[in-house]
Length: 482
Image 1 (tube, helix red, strand yellow):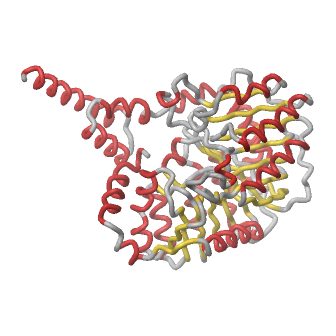
Image 2 (image 1 turned 90 degrees about the horizontal axis):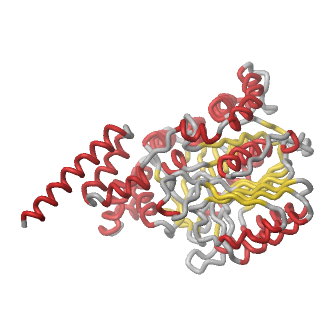
């Protein structure tokens, strides 16, 4: 008995020491600190092991050292346009879009997101059409192909894509494939064997021998980008796997949004890929001007900025741009996201918009793929409904789109979910589009999806089962660390 008492006493002392470490050394925000303290309290010792894997922050100086001169060279290049915009010498062509110049300025000064207004944009909401177009552009590539995806599967779609890449590598093109080591943890090494044999290259982002014991497990490259010859780019929510074609029995139809872009905005995608590749790969890419050709698609008229954010940046750039868009709204806000775990600033901005008379509509999936996140999402809905926000639950398969449209004038499509993880921990990238036709098309897509959705009313929410409320409460407490 004395041995057990002594052991219990040691565990208590150790837990107190670990809690002090979390509070005083990490200096987190209050909600995150309390969430980790709850984990330490209910799961002594093991909770700290989880903290070591999931809770440690990567110091910005570590990432800056890893990035080396790569970021500085690109930032020096982009500084010229930042100065132009600061002097108000670079303005949107449309007087209607000139009202968003302060948002453009913020994106440029905090994320070095160039504003370009010569872009052509195609919108994909169906995986088959998106990947047919992607593989067609692989076949048309002449100099290089750059891909980065969070999830890659070795299935029919994955092999179809790889076959196309192998053919182009065998023709002598530069083919580089960057994948996230955690998101693609089930991907076998043999998947890239033929690509390497043909002269192509692959790299894993922040790998480890045992994926889920990776001390960088939190810092994942969640971007989905494809760049062809520096002239055509893809960005959005589709990863590579059969489920994104609607072939997964559990999820059924897969509803996502992806963009094909031609024009000056592609150069920003290219710059981001080069930095990501050089952070992950042993064989670096030289910053050659050949990767940044003058865009041929000069007939485009769409204004865009590509905003990147991650643990290596000073601000939460994508979240800040979302908030700026929401505060600019005068009439309507349409938001689609698979995961909704907002911080207080984003939650407040949505509620203020609704209370100010703006029609705010949010669409979420009706079925979960991550249960904790699903129930944490639902814990926020009561506050939104009470403020006048309309909530739609998409029922025709799984909704994975990450889209925000304001006043049918400006829009965002990208890789970032509306949650704390995407805003603070993941490496993400979103396209911010300043064009009434494109924004109106995305808004129309939202309302088409609403026909396949069920509106969640306040009465429905109040009458939900007690067990659901319990799951929401527990998940809400853990939401800062999800």
